[in-house]
Length: 247
Image (cartoon, rainbow, N blue to C red; front, side, top):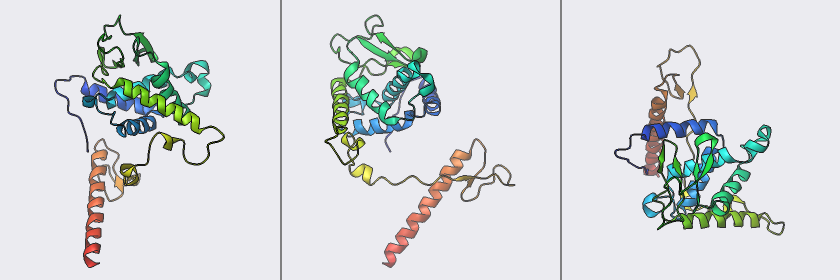
């Protein structure tokens, strides 16, 4: 399990709460983030310390893209939130081809907007090619300022866009369009399926009483669910171990 630890960052919990809120309101955010994150990870462009785009910056880029998507402004009654293919292609086109990131930055404020980098003091003369992504919790913080491999990220997005568009040609048949940008490597193929969700008890049991396959409707139910899942996993592992010993 990979995770980041931040020190002396006062708005960390607020940023986490903001992301959770956006996940709830933007249906397309989670699947888009998963696909693009894997896409960057397979090209070693997903870590800030190697010049890639970090998770928080990537999520902010996707959220800004969803806020600014033309479907939300031209015909709000016909949003394309459920058409993940269109949203993915438009994301790749925006950050890989259309956005002039030497002059313009991206913000999620005011329903999403672009801004000029120089007046905001976010233009780096030594690295004019950097993405400028405004921190939703701090307008003066550019969360992409350390992503020195922005040109590679931009090129990767552009290449993925062109590859998918070319694969849609009538002469190209077979395979998945998504497979043209995300390869089914060993990590994805061997990834275990998620455990089935635990059933929420609505019977006569009092809140707080937990049995296998059930969770009480209390704020602590998530932790209880995780404990139940771990118990089930350990039982399965023990059964497998016994079976292999007998064999």
